[in-house]
Length: 187
Image (cartoon, rainbow, N blue to C red; front, side):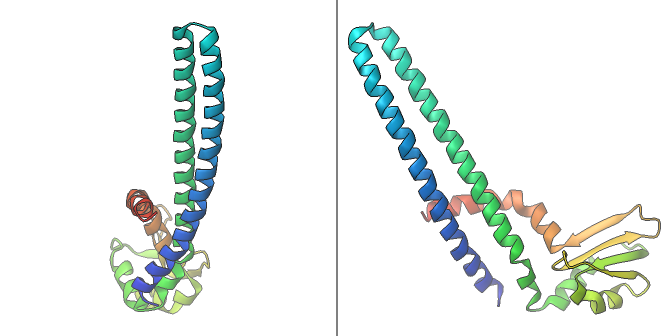
């Protein structure tokens, strides 16, 4: 599976989640709208009985409250969508191992500072690659790593994490605004 196909698959799954979150947000917004309309209707009745100033003030309070609830709802939906997309992307990281992974592993190993690495933690499927790039290090298998490596020096004071998971974590905050903008533009 190439990256383009992977991205298409991720977008398809993400779009379905976006659609569901959007429907939930619309339903909640409709409920807030109904509550607001009912409150405003009651206020109009009060307005006929009380002064214009008091009713206008209460209408503004209700409108402000509704706007605040709507903002909170949008923020909550955005957080939920972000978490869903992150989980989806993270669960798909093993797919990056399919094509040209040995070269990617070599590049990631070359990015590390030139230290004498004592321990190298890698995906169990990467043990042979790790032995080639780190012949003097202890190779530790870790199924939580989908690709890349985590290395520590002799005294354990220097540790570098250069895994797919860490790369996604580091870039996620930069990706989210673009992903959100694109997902809202398509819906």
